Length: 202
Ligand SMILES: [Zn+2]
Image 1 (cartoon, rainbow, N blue to C red):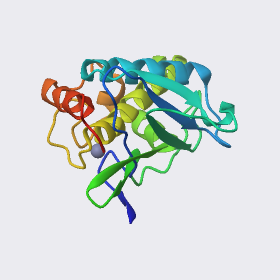
Image 2: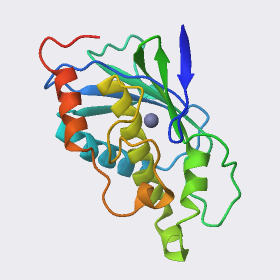
Image 3: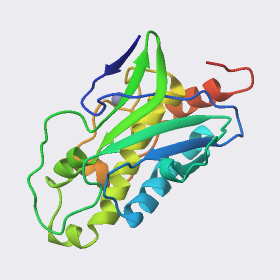
Image 4: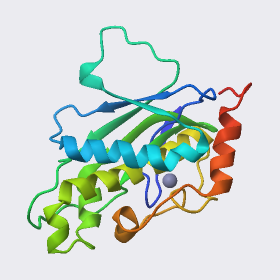
């Protein structure tokens, strides 16, 4: 039985068992979602930067560009909701609910996630000043990358809880979404490495 786990940051999705040294394909489901390519580029770079210490290499693909019978050795899927592009002015968004989520089944975490762009943007509005809106899509992409890295922590570590720190903690403030550095703590990175090591399996 699949259910959604909610947390301050997550509102529910999945994970992948990885084999050390092999890239994990990240499929982006952007159906009917407006997005910015510059945001996506920053999102990919930030998520990869955060997860690199765990030995994770990400191979990004858009669902709309997949062939008829795509095959992947390791894959996670993220669906996006809302408008994944920064508006050049202050807009009121619905801030109720988590920014993202990962699905779980019984005792495992599944490789399916959802990212709510409007909620991420609502959080960013608390910290954005005038100059931030000028580079809004880049900052939105950084925030999305941190949110995705958090969800992939659940998936790769197969951990529903938040015993770690850094990007693996239960909630990220609006400042922590875009300001300063946000990394994977060393212990969590080690746990992910162990789960992905030779002999590891789901
Ligand atoms: Zn979480």
